[in-house]
Length: 72
Length: 126
Image 1 (cartoon, each protein chain N blue to C red):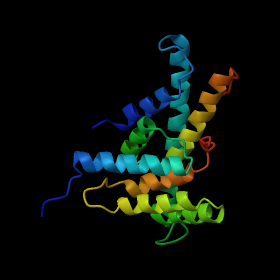
Image 2 (spheres, chains in turn brown, blue; image 1 turned 120 degrees about the vertical axis):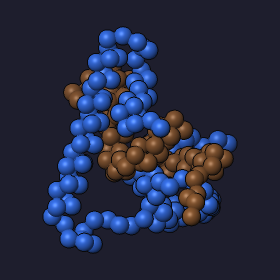
Image 3 (cartoon, rainbow over the protein chains, first blue to last red; image 1 turned 120 degrees about the horizontal axis):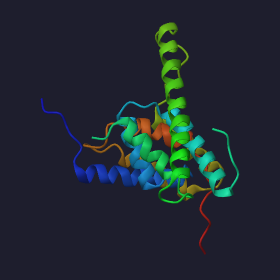
């Protein structure tokens, strides 16, 4: 039996849906970050671990913007 | 397909928006971000390995599907008076049931739920 591979338009549609869900939940992912996260999940990365990574990266990014130094 | 190292690197790159495009400072910060990211990911892998060694089948681990978690958040939105947003959220979830969709939507929904409310809502336009 042939496996059902997601076609390009279905993938794009799914990404648009996930992006809108992200916006409604105030998850803070733009399309670029979301695409990377989807691919990391496809590679088997645990979503809870990934969310921890994103929170830490945001903290560091905020400290960069504020000019404050965070020891990583 | 891109490997995990490239994807993590790209994710770190996005979070260096305040720095010049090139230079030593950017390299140092990128290295620090990558160390932090891999530290979290690796600690999770070892934690999972320990759990799989000690846990019996069906014990303790949260198995609520990502979709159900989003539905719980949708209920919260209704309680908070955001009826339209809750309705839209449920419509969007239903769209994810179509054939040929991405295989990892459950994991991505888990991620979005974990990150829910981590940024302020967009300003209302009148």
